[in-house]
Picture (tube, helix red, strand yellow):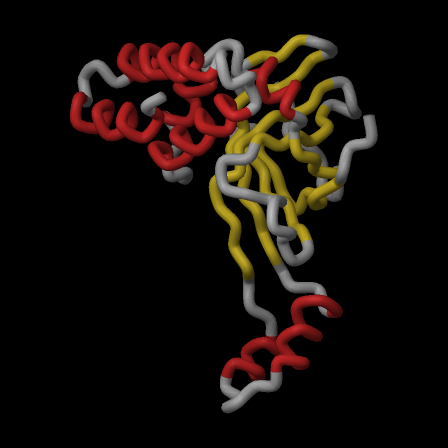
Length: 196
């Protein structure tokens, strides 16, 4: 299977990583998307969820913003022909070791300039067979946890056949009820968001 590189690693830590990419295509990258990066010299793959996409400015854009009646040709040139600095932040939620997925922090982070790829539907389905990764999202300090859970659970449901989606969403709801049993307001909000 040919994997499409969606970016290259800028910096990483055990809890997550940041990659850079060119102007986003309509589908890549998206908030809540499952992505992967090689780690431990290719022995494992760090699995993560995109939780922030930031389009940084550059000196040329700063000058263009102040130009009244900016021609469309300049805007298209900037978007198509120049390197627009885009940083995508990823929360680590697990890793693959051979054919096995583990829902815990990876033993090592990926290395600078490693290729970042989107996880296939089959990989997302296999990874989300268990729901231990939800705890990692809930405990994330920097990520918008509730929004990310709703997006990730929705993405995991979409990769399944239509007849399996309601069962998966019920299981996710039960796991969230277990994890958030002491925060009923938050739980109710999340359950509304993932309702089958």
